[in-house]
Length: 319
Ligand SMILES: [Zn+2]
Image 1 (tube, rainbow, N blue to C red):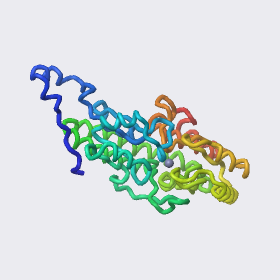
Image 2: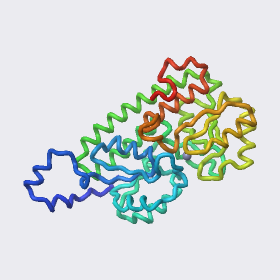
Image 3: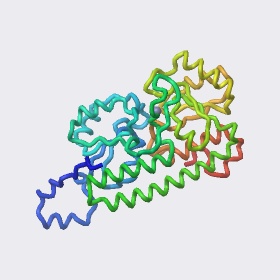
Image 4: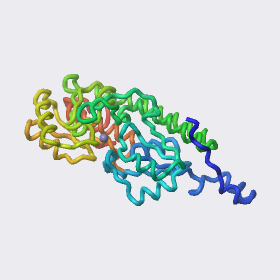
């Protein structure tokens, strides 16, 4: 750390002392809140979890968007111009990070949350980028505890007056993450070990699979490369025929046509969507990180379990 500059409260110099005293006990006005920009919705949700009302967060890639190959829109440039801090995942998730850097110049700190977290990386499984660190680290709640720590440190340096609030909120959220990790472990363990197979469009689950003891593969290794080529399709059809999973899964940000094509060639069931690269709609089943992870686990248990795992948690779509 140490690179984050304390914001200067220039607005304060323009106000008279009595007015400042009057304002003091009130919640922060819009112009006083820290302006944070996140690269995608999941990170925006985590920044809000720590920042609360002191931080105004916008996500560049909106709900349902493809984050890997997002193209900056005019609205994004406006948001970046106002930003005091920019949070992104790193490890190659945001293929467009150079464009952000060029836009904000040296004025805004760019925080690569996954890279700064120090959480051990897993390699991309297959494809052109095989062996490089896989970016989908947030799919392990234990890694997200570290994300929260990075976000806390960044906000506390930027806005020391909010330090206590950020610490309290970070502690509370980290406790929820511990509970999430344990709940999912219990729920997913109801699936028999040989049925714990997760085949998806993008092989975006190496952290999740490691955390919860699944075999994992996908049609392609990363959304940053070609998607659904004949070669990728043939490879995964062979794999599905070999592993015979209870179902194969599609993701909310990717058309289900690839997975359906594999299913029709192999006769396995299709389930989904799983949420990985974006939250769902704010009021929906996957509107926040915590509900998204619980929803994913419910979808997986419903598809791969023997039907007796339902007593451990909520029914699918119930969160
Ligand atoms: Zn992805």
